[in-house]
Structures are given as structure tokens and as C-alpha cells.
Length: 300
Image 1 (cartoon, rainbow, N blue to C red):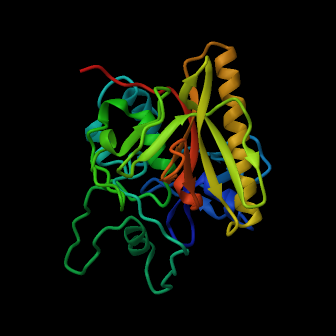
Image 2: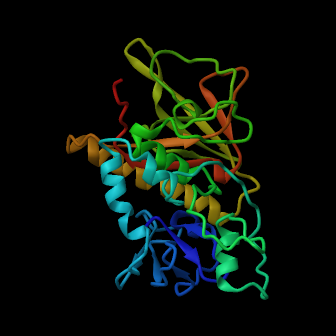
């Protein structure tokens, strides 16, 4: 599983974000599904792991667990619209980006059902005893949003709100960087492109990530690059990004050599350099990630 629920705060936690924690309680997570208490164990969560982090369960999910059916939804969503399921599956297609700097403070007087509703952003005011269907939850980084963009190509008309971006659907929020010359972008988007095979270049002040997109000059591709300013980042956050990039780069090369159709992509929200349009600048670790999947653009 890509995510689990924190047993203390009942917040949904992305497996990749565990690599940012100084300490991971391996017994502190459970299935993110409603009415499912099966324990979820974090795997490959150390920053040095060149394998994507994930959660593993060792027993069967609860009878009413909605997560148990998510794999089937993802499989069907790669071939056709699954909008109805996405509208009531909190973890599959986030509705907005909600950046949070600190963990939620838990009120010890809340009972578990109230905690869960609070974590899911539902109204639990007195007198409202009817259980509402689980809606699309917010994401605390762009990672789950980008996974949804790749997984559900036939449902990109779903709403998506990100502060600073003036478009409001998955289809229009994302912008692919191409190899047709360097564009000057006047509006913010979630930019993305396939990762180059060349490794990122590390400096004390920043990390420069080359992309397989840009402009062909005399038969050679001059690449777009993303410059990550990380002077304020922890060593753990730096290691997490470096190892994630290396994992994605290796996945990309292996897929290409085996003639697979999947590719590794870098997604980011950043500012384009005013003097050098081939460069983008990112300084927030929550606004950059990789994903390896099949990129599909359905025909009308």
C-alpha cells in the first residue's frame, strides 16, 4: 500500500514521507480504510533505500474495508472512467493540496470515531448522526496527486485545487515540458517531464536535476533542469530526494532497455528562471516528487 493511517493522529500518511522522519514507529500504523484495524508495517522507509517505500499488511482486511478494493479500481481506471468510485474513495484522487507543517495535535477526550472523522475532514457536529460517504481527501504533498494523474487518465476532468494555480481540474493543472524549444510559462502549473538518464548534480546549496525535455540544437538535446535549493532542508530530506531520484533513474533506464512503456517522471511546482527559461527553481520538499508509471492521453 502507498499509504496508511497513523494510529495516534488517525491521519493518512504517505509511505514515501516516512523517509523524512527521524524515527518511524513500525507498529504505529494501520490500514487507511474505514472500519479496518489491520496493522500496516512500513517497508523500505529508510532514506538510503533505493526501493520505493510502502506499507505491508500481514492479515486480511476487514470485511467492509474500502482499501481492499482499491487495486481493482486502479486497474480499471487505467482503461476507463471510474469517477463514481473516485468520488467516494478518499485516498485515490485527492481534491486539493493542503500543505501542513506540523502534525495534528490529538485531543485525548475525542473518541476514536470522532478522531477518524476529524482526520478525514468530515463534519461531526452534534445532531448529525447520519454517516456521510467518504469524500476525496486533501493531500499534504503533490505526490498522491501526481500518482492519481497517472493512474486515472480517463478521469482528469475531476476537480483539483492548488493555491497559486488558477486552473481547477487534473487535466488543466498539469503541464508537460516537451522537446520543442524552451517555453516561457506565464502561469503556475504542476510541471512534469521524463527524467533524463544523467544523474542529478549535487552542490552544497542546491541539486540540479536534468530532464528529458528541452530544445534540440545541432542534434543534441539541451535539457530543461530543475534546481532544488535545499540549504534549509534537513540531511534526511536531502537524502530522501537524492535516493528517490536515483531509484527513479534506474527504473527509467531499466524500462527503456526492456522496451517497457512505463517511464519515470519528475513532477514539481516551481518558478521559472527569468533569465534562463530552461531552469526551474524549487525550494519546498513537498512540491517535488517522482513517479514511475505509464503516461496515457486518451483520445476523444
